[in-house]
Image (cartoon, rainbow, N blue to C red; front, side, top):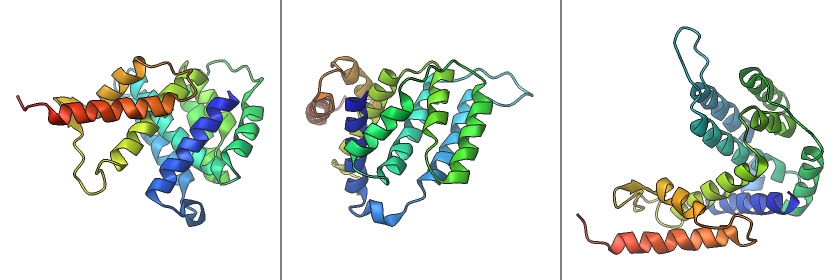
Length: 210
């Protein structure tokens, strides 16, 4: 777990630095981003008692990954990836959580985040348990989304030149396909995924239009 945490924290530090080289000194309100994402998350899970709703679990998990990005950023305010990974592992390991009331637990997590303006790691771990999302799945989904965000930034996302749809399919579809083709247990999984994205992007950009 610690190796995976170190990699995710390093990737988060890198993407934050790509967006703003002095991001640590900016004191961005990461807690506010978590609060807003939590509201979007609840919409995907469903909360309206006056209509039939079924949880959109894949979207719920995607929103949890987005929250994890902001949570890692808050954790990185406390130190280097190595230092923070050790503290996070100590807090996460040895706790056997069972699924509970997701809506109530999400509200508790959000309240704790707003009150402390810090990342409620224990509360987040409970949300993962509530939707049966293991740490390995979180790792796989996070690395994929992080690499895609970095790829977009480095291929013209800011200036509007990046092409999000490749041969009729959105880039996140290509990402999911490539992720499934790689071994997430490899130490250089993130680098492999970036290279695979770059190779496919080059290939489809040269392909003749239909």
